[in-house]
Each structure stands twice: as structure tokens, then as C-alpha cells.
Length: 269
Image (cartoon, rainbow, N blue to C red):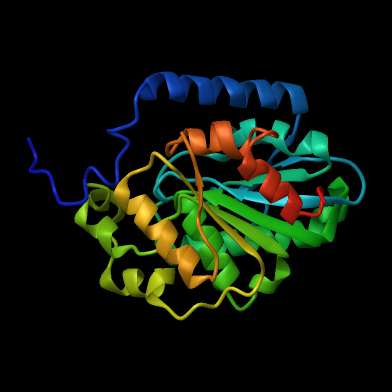
């Protein structure tokens, strides 16, 4: 058996109770949303493999939520996060869930560039699905939460009005001390270049930083530190973990997280 490393438990789902049942609930909710909302799937936003997105329209002039999925930059796909649609589309927000090329086939900089291409594509093409190109917002969880921070720190990040970073990783150095790095093989240069907590703050648009209240100490620490860097407080979603912070948080219209995001989008007073 391989020797456990310092950050293995912090970067895993080992402490999530009933994990297989949660995965099954997530998959069923995603399939239900795909049937119910009939999105445009697999729309290319760039030339590379994996550079596609799914569009859930919400009528003319709707603000657009662009969601970036998690999976430690190396797994999962847009279809699986279709369960977010019921939390936005019926309330007047178009939802666009993006895919991106995965590590280790590409490097982290390639993923950031792909996500930026996706955001630009959505802005340029929003009117084709009824969206308002002047009201583009970002959200993402885990690796996607990190990518939201990267895009909003980018010089071209002004193309979005606001964002929500959920359970993100904002300092990549601890990841290198876990089993996750066996696949990722993050370099010191990547850690320095793509760790928001290791740079001067550069995010100008409103940003919600959220994390499940039952997540590991490292995810809680990083979200709190990043929120403080951004001049706000982390929204800790009580009773949720790394999976349910989306299933029972962002996706549920009655949750404080969903309400905060829709308020940021101008859909609530």
C-alpha cells in the first residue's frame, strides 16, 4: 500500500458519509434536468478537444450564469452538472455549463485559456440563445472555483459582472503534497502562477466565496483566506460537504447560496 501523504485526506472525499448514494443522487438529478430542460449540448466554443458547452436558455434578455465544473482539473464533465438548471432557468437566468480539456493531457495554463475562450464565446453568442451579453456571471466548484478566481483575476476578466467561487483551491502548493498530484504533476512554476493566494489581489468585480461547512480543514482554510484577501467573508453553507454544497446549496432555490447568487445576478432585490 502506498504511503499516505500529509494532504491526502484533506484533498479527498474520504470523510463524506454515504458518498456512493450522493453520487447516485447527483447523477439522477443531472439526468432529470437534461430530460426536463432539453439544453443545447456539446456546442463548440474553441478548436481543442473538450472545448464544448451546454446551454440552458431562459428567455429573451436573460442574464447568463457560466458554470465551471470541478474534478481536480482532471475529471468529470458538463453533463453531470445539469442538475443546476432548476435553480436558475425557471427564475430567468440562462445557464451555460462548460467543459474544458483535462489534465494531464494538457497543462493548467491550457485549462485557464480554454475557460477564458468559453467566457468570451458566451459573451459573443449570448444573444443567439436569448442571453444578455452585458450580464454574464461566473460560478464554479472545487477546481472550477479555482478557475473562477483565475478568470476574474485575468486582465480580460472584466467581461463578467460577478462571480461565485465555491469550495475552490486558491493555493496549489498543498495539492502537491497529496495523491492528487500523482496525475496532475503540478510544477513549482504552475503553483506560483495559478495560486490566487500567492498573488496580489486582482479581482475587481463582486465575488461570492462559498464553501460547505462540513468540508475538510484545508478547503475551509483556503476559502476563508481567499475571501479575506478579496475583502469579504466566506459563506459557509452549514450541513453541506464537497458534493452537497452544490446539490443542496447552489442548485436549490430556497438555499442561502442560491439566493445570494441570484441576487448578485439582479434577479432578486
